[in-house]
Structures are given as C-alpha cells and as structure tokens.
Length: 246
Image 1 (tube, rainbow, N blue to C red):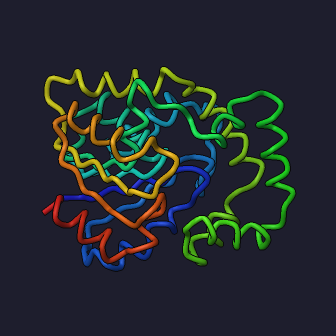
Image 2: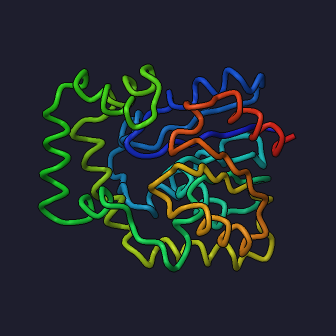
Image 3: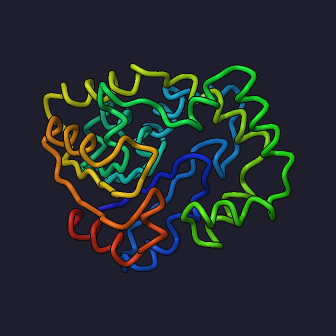
C-alpha cells in the first residue's frame, strides 16, 4: 500500500526526511504542491480548489487506494481530495483537524496573508531576505536545520504569490464548510487526527478532538510537540503513523 505524504506552507518535502528514515518502509511517496518545492504549471490557479484538483490528479496516477498523510495545508489538500474522490484514499491522516471547526479563527500570520496590501508587503519582504537569514528563524520555530534550509531556499516570489492566493481562497467559513463536507460523506476513509499539543496554528487540542469525534476518527496525542512534530521527534512520529497504517 502506497503512503503519500503532502506538506504545507511555507515548506518543502524535506520536512518529512527525518520521519521517513524512521518509518523503515519502501512504499512512501512525497508530493510537493505547485509553488512549494515544485514548479507551477501554466494556467494553474493556486486556490484550495486548484490544489484539490492537483492532488486528485496525482493520486489517480498511483496504484491505490493510498494512505494519504497531510501536514499543514497539505492536510487541507488531502481532506478535500479525499472528500472529492474517497475511492482513491484508503486512509487519511491530518494534523489540522481543528481548522475544520466552526469556531476556528485563522492565526495571525494567515490573517496578514489574507489582507490585501499587508500580505503582499510581507511576502515581498520575505523574498528580499537572504535564505541564509531565514534558516535560524525556522529552526527557532521548530524545524531541523536541514529542513529549515530546504524550506528557506524554496521560498521566493512564486511561493509567496501562491500563499496569498491559497489563503485568500480559504477565508472562514470555508474551512469549516469543507470539514462538514467530509463529515457528510457516506463512506469516509479511515481517519487519524494527529494532535500536536504545542501547535499554535490549528485551534488547539480540544478543537481537534471535537472535529475528530464528528468524523469518527482515531486520535494520536503528541504532547510536547508542535507544528513540525515530524521533525521534532521523528521516531515518535514514525511510530505513530506506522501503528495506524499497519
């Protein structure tokens, strides 16, 4: 069974490397969303709908159904792809379930990106900053140095433009609406909600637990870990996924 890993914003596939090394599997595939470590095809619209359709197309090319694991916006794309084409997904793993709650409010950085003018100014400032200067900032946020370097090097004007369009396509209540659409599926893929207790971007553990209950999902509680749990404790992350997937 193929395990598909999809990363988020503002990231590159290298965030998974330490965890993949611990998983001891030969069936793991990483997919990089356009603009996030992968080229943006001509005519591609980097909205949530666009990324949903991109991921569905990618999954159609794999022997499936697959075990689909998403982190950050990668989990958002995974949820929407699994909702649109549940037959392609045997199981779903998400670490942003709380964002599907009707009471979720976007974090401060997301609200900057969603604000015309402010968002453009921010991504222009980031693009103008040497990648080397961004690495320690990402390390302080919880990434490994190798992961931070890969993400910093991938983050330029193209990624910035994709970030703005993506976040502006997902102003609430869209996230909760997409969660409701998944809830309403007649047959949902078996689902695992990963709850990293120190993740301050996704609404907190209680919100995630509430959504998991609506979905009938399994829950994995990762106390002491934050948004980049797969880099902070790759052995624990791998064990968590392997236990669910096996």
